[in-house]
Length: 283
Ligand SMILES: C[S@@+](CC[C@H](N)C(=O)[O-])C[C@H]1O[C@@H](n2cnc3c(N)ncnc32)[C@H](O)[C@@H]1O
Image (tube, rainbow, N blue to C red):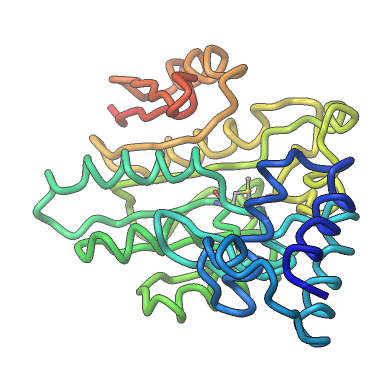
């Protein structure tokens, strides 16, 4: 089959599931990933005759995309702050909002001359601590997750990037004391309530780990409460707590943090101007 014919077939098969722009992005990404063709290859070589194995490769992905499977899980790859990360269905696909949280942290850290003790809670793919370790060598970073499978992925990513991060399996709901006092705690915990399942997109609901998405109870701040209580004990005076959060709950989170020993609560916006992250200093 000629490339142009395959492109038309690909568009036709997926147009009920995705927008035209999304389909174009998928095809360009696939041919780059599998065949190392530049994004312009299809336009320049429309009559290129696809081999049987090339067609079979694309057909396999087409079938998966039709079932709403995220392309990142099909290719086992996503990008976070320009770095390639291995992902599979045991971890959340890192989101652009989280990149902004990490940029915020990195812009704060150059102020410190001493090596800071940092803890990431609910690390998933390890995207937060690994990029912190790559970009700032003056950090002593530990990351925890309750999921053994997620930690395997995070360790694999740390190895790929030669990042010095200590990964430990821990459940934040039962953790109270940490063996060193911490300068920084960061978390992007699950905050979707089980009752919100019905409003979710199928590509998220059917493929991303529910452990990474949902709170165990109908309380969107369930994990934030646990983490704040943990930070109250283990964060040093003047230590910083960073959270990513759904803009809907930022008011409630601010109120909750203020009732503990925290001051200078600052809310950060994402690129769409939405209140998406928060930092607070331990008194
Ligand atoms: C929203 S995901 C965030 C993943 C990653 N930090 C990111 O930003 O892409 C939340 C993570 O918290 C982990 N998690 C869920 N319950 C937990 C618990 N009780 N203790 C520790 N981690 C937990 C999940 O396994 C998941 O990896």
